[in-house]
Amino acid sequence: MIVSVPDLISSLKSFHRHLLDDPALDPALIPTDLPHGPSMIDRGPGALIELGPGPDDGWRAPFAARDALVPVGRLRRIDGMVEFAREDQGNWPARCPVGQPDPPVYSDAADVWRTAQRGFVKVCDSLNHSLTTLCLQEAVMGSRCLAALETGLPSDRVLAIPVLPLWLDGDYVGGEPDHQFFASREHDVLVMNWAGAWVGSPIHEVTDLVAPGIGVHRMH
Image 1 (cartoon, rainbow, N blue to C red):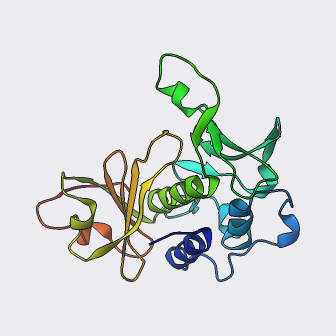
Image 2: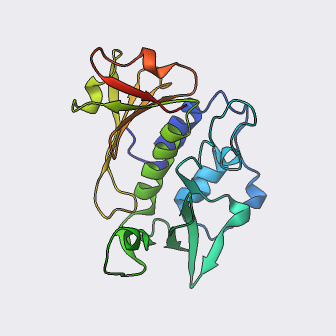
């Protein structure tokens, strides 16, 4: 189970180990006033945040498949906050105050689906918590092999191989815990329950891993 940002970094490095031999970002590029969470991620697999989709095989970016963790060179500062994440079509950003170890997260994402517009409101008390949910979501959605599953089964029963809880009741910008993640023992398959069930892997054909009787939509 992930209980800290170092745990998240270890998990991401393991899952993305086939992309770069050394995914660390030059520490000189990292702003000194960034909160601890994004700063540690930039020092860990930060070079992967710079990667875009593969040119030939259609796989998507490891940190920018559905939404995007913003690379350090494109961070925007607004009213004492930094925009650390954005929705993939630019519909909303997520921001946090700088100069704090683990500040709250603010976003206007709810304005996309709510009639009453509220603007930027607090959506999570902990940046580190929100970052964990975002990074794991992007790991799944950016996998070389990704499938959406048709099932009402619990996430730990959708595959024919065992999976273990990795990050449960994850908050992001929805204002409530709505993401659940499970991982294979070898940490090369991730299952996400959010807006349906999803399974992704950088190396395995995930349709071969789904439990019998479950409908599969191969995404890529």
